[in-house]
Length: 61
Image (cartoon, rainbow, N blue to C red; front, side):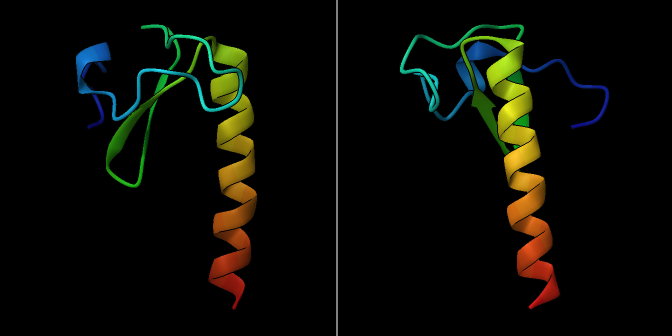
């Protein structure tokens, strides 16, 4: 997906998992091959930090 523009219509969710607000086009990311949306870039970045920590812990096991 590198170099590909992420689109709202490709997101697996319509509401931000952190806030419950509608997702925004400037707050999309790819996680495990799926486009995931957030209400703002801050929520997206919080998700990225959390998943890095969880994925790192799983890899250590």
